Length: 381
Image 1: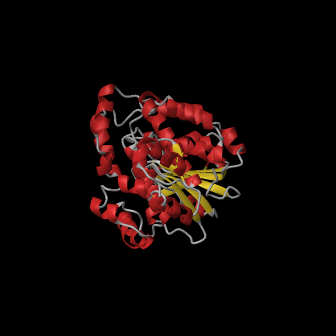
Image 2 (image 1 turned 90 degrees about the vertical axis):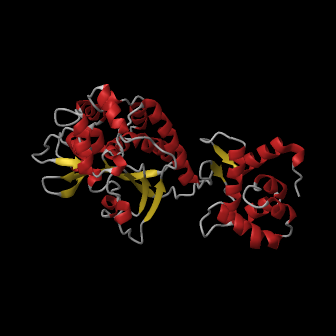
Image 3 (image 1 turned 120 degrees about the vertical axis):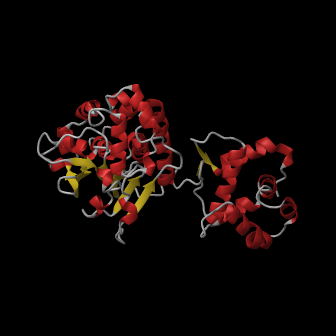
């Protein structure tokens, strides 16, 4: 497959905070590495900062191992009843102050014990590797003491403070919070959960944002992106689970989702649920669509009246009436083209055939399967 993004450029990676959903970012990282994407620097908040340090050290296999074996006991020292209470909480409907209060209701002793998280960070972070890395690395947190956003440059941080900075970025509301450097800090997501500005302020022009839709201030929505900056966004279209739902099996699933969604961005794959490689021009796929009218009529009848689609003929009837109508019914973007429409049609075919979702298909793969299944029902024009 031919990449759609420019592999000659160096990219800044932005890693959003989102707790247990962080495995998704590591899956995306694997796809970026396999494609040969050059990483110049990383900006992360909370779990994104921790993943960012492993990316800075280029410890992909170690990051995958951490997430594949993830469990509550690696992050929190609490009993099962507390975990059950946390699972039932709807953190999406709460602000950071309310979240802290809700967590403390479930826990005695002033907050969740995060000694295991401290141990995990200590095991993962190698300060010397970070300082010697060719990649820059930044961690965002919020200073409660100074009431302002703080962006730490980990490579220039004072010796022995790197692990503390990562903790400062990860103090989720309700976690037991020790003062660091004589100040009180809170999870960076409380002020900037998508720290894209940290890189643009330092002159980065090509950026890849890996979203996991964690809780916090979505700075990307509020940020006026400079005109000369290009941003590629890798984002999930499926639920990644709760932000405190630390579970190895779910993490393995999210690693795969992150990988596939990154492949979608890198290679311009079509499809909402499926991943379809369509490297040719709009004209090519228009011709393919017109040559598959019999298949179209079989698979698209739920979207138009059967008598309408069975009686139509001629290019203009399709281009002026049927195709625009289908594009609207299939909820394509206003600037859709025939490549988009054919991709949407192929996805309908894939769904009806119940093809495996987390796999890359070519347009030819899907249409060949359709003909094989339908056999004599289809007469190609």
